Amino acid sequence: MTLKGRIAELIAEAGPIPVSQYMALCLFDPKEGYYTTREPFGAKGDFTTAPEVSQMFGELVAVWLASAWQAAGAPKNAILAEIGPGRGTLMRDMLRTLARIAPDLMRRVAMIETSPRLVDVQKQLLGNESISWHRAIADLPDAPLFIVGNELFDAIPIRQFVKTQQGWRERCVGLDADGELVFIAGPGTTDAPLPDAPVGAIYEAAPARNALMLEIAERIARQGGAGLFIDYGHLENGVGDTLQAMRAHAHADVLATPGEADLTSHVDFAALGAAAGAAGLDARTTTQARFLIGLGLLERAGQLGAGANADLQERLHGEVERLAAPEQMGELFKVLMVGRTITGLPPA
Image (cartoon, rainbow, N blue to C red; front, top):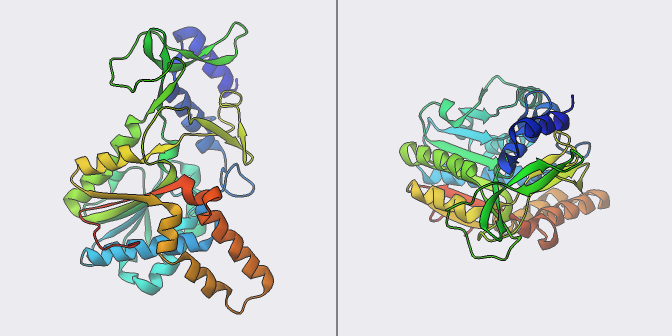
């Protein structure tokens, strides 16, 4: 039986399931979940992340982490970590850069990954002699932590609420008369403080995302370090349905093919920043364009293209446009920087 069939069977037996449960089944089901069975990244996958677009992305992320490490006094026992590292491309590019500018930050490198299949992919790309793999933040040894997460939070399941004539209700996945998956308003209302909105409006909340951010922030507050998180989303929360499915680099029906498409939603950076602040950290947000350009994206592209042939220069120009142009990733993607203090860290 397909995952779609099993979900329909579950709903038929137990009733409608919340959007958060549907997302979790689609993405992480042990047998047929998207991230447990598929190679989602790159041209042959369903979407392309910034590290796959250009090596310059990882190089500039490494510059920021090195700056944060040096500002913290360059602790010798620091852990450099990536959470949700995909194929390992970002870490590969960071390590190549850090070998030149901050080799002592490479003494303890950790990858936080829950998928055994992706761990194998990462080990093939990176080797594993000087890198340790862990399933959770809590598994890391105590030490100052310098951590990066790129397109991490968007795949953590969210809750959705729909405004009805009777008030706000949790949005669920149920079955129509033909047994097909459909969105419905769940039973019962919520007493959560939700914004005023017209009937039919959708409001999204992400308690699991905020809990993970708080866990990371509390660790940094105790042990020292800094965090850098890049994802697509908004700086201020509001009403709207951002749940989407991506398959073969195109939008797909969220309910059509469970387990065969990536399900994500926009990240609420205001909520993540508030979670970091609750742990006592400084938090600053900006757009990916301002972050990368402030760290020297244009200058780095010029260095790589100096004296190069026209084809390479054109490719580099395309990479810069993809990473930083407002109509591409530049404005849609946001950056959250957190630490005990981030005053003086780039970009200014």
